[in-house]
Image (cartoon, rainbow, N blue to C red; front, top):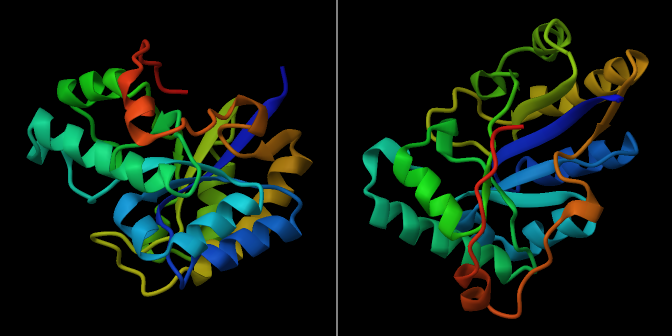
Length: 217
């Protein structure tokens, strides 16, 4: 089987970052997976749609960026429902869910089952939220590339971010993509177009179905 590198982005959409990342991906003839925040989708629906229309995969991050260890199961469920509703309004029914900071609880898993979502984290963290130089991030990622790799980046400035913009993340993308391709990796989104779940007719219809939860990729 070919080696794969999945490009994933959390905490958007955000005007300062998302469009530049999408354009860089386009120039590199690839796409990525954007785990979106429901509140931000509602604030910038046109930006969220433009990411989708550029051929990228859109999945669920949260509605409010709060650790699940700080929420009850009912609060997690409500937050998830709100985020799914926001995403369904731009034509997306997510199949995958990356929780805030990748933190999950037993309640997270039960909520995922109820909403027919597969929980997924990452295998390589760029730590771009710290504002690390692109060259340092590239060296770090390259040293860990193996098999089916999932790289975590951010197209939004989330809680705790030490950077003021996404310059270094944008600068990382092209050399990362070219390096991975040179080493025989197929580069693209976590969920490819053929695998994506279409939006149901209504939010209620999408939330009634239940299926088994998946494991981390």
